[in-house]
Length: 166
Image (tube, rainbow, N blue to C red; front, side, top):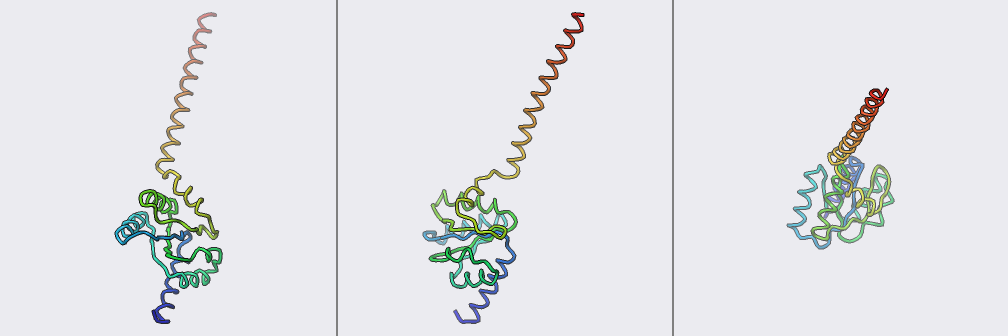
């Protein structure tokens, strides 16, 4: 790769990092082309993007964005997930894919200006989707309303009995 090509790659990475408030650094060792393609397809469906990077070029792009906390995680086979607007969806795809194929492994993440550990990203991926959380909340409200209706009915019967006794 010539020097202008390397600089062009660094500039492109710098722009992608600047545009993405959330990124995950992964080790893709052991993923063949077919699995890598499947992983990328799943991420794309959530609005995320996965790229394989050269470590030295990635660290230069991080330095250009004043991100120093992730430098130690760029060694070996490295890929970056640009999570886009929904980090939970991208984390969920990474977690599910890793359960199925034992790869990729998450090394670190960058969420809203802070470095995060792999355990945080794993927990982020285990949070139920927005629709599931809303349905759980509505189910809770339904239960509360049902109980309230039962209490009101009992109170009405008690008052009727008290009125008949007088």
